[in-house]
Image 1 (cartoon, rainbow, N blue to C red):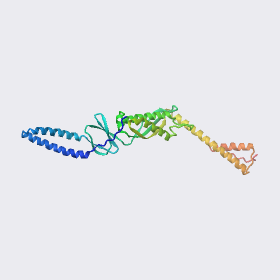
Image 2 (cartoon, helix red, strand yellow):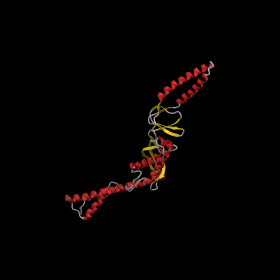
Image 3 (spheres, rainbow, N blue to C red):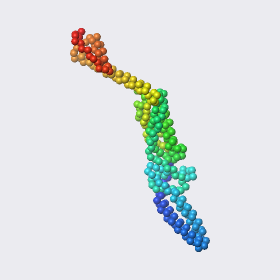
Length: 294
């Protein structure tokens, strides 16, 4: 693989001033050669030819100037051969025959489209992600792939699709990593996979995160009902656990403080009433016993 070679070029200002003085001298020589030709001096023809060639060289020299902005690099190519990369900021000059390709080194964002794929359990979902990346090796970006921008986009979407099929959308048992509940772990996995895919283009991935995740419209309503049912079941389990604990505490305190002595039948009746009161999702209506306890 072609690796980057940093090759600083000459300052453009020194070459510019030198070329201006050279151009003025060539113009003076051109005028002097014309004067000699009018005087039928044979030297005038030679000087005219030299001045024209020098003028063309001076004009060619002006084509070698270029500028390098911050976080930018210029890849230099001479007749198809990679020469090096100029990263020095400012006004620079290089061989006029060099082909100069400008590469941005700035951090970029890629927001993928919403992709419709099946998760690990086969449920159709919609997913998209934001990928933060930048070019690290300019030689690989230019020579190893045809179009590094399109390469990053295609490989990122491919990695997102593969990620979606590697995890379930949600895990009701809480024992498995899922797309919805394990955001940090999934994002780290996505970043590593995209980085491995685009490293051939000299690109480094700084961050990758899911920015949209949902069930496909055709199953969204059914999945919402399932999630609501699972939430209700989980809440009921917590309520029952708490109710049992409160009933047990009430019976122990009644016994320890000798408030009332209940036989097994009365205890069962009391437990039943307390469980109804604590576990009911509606307000209970008490019935006051005005007669004897027995």
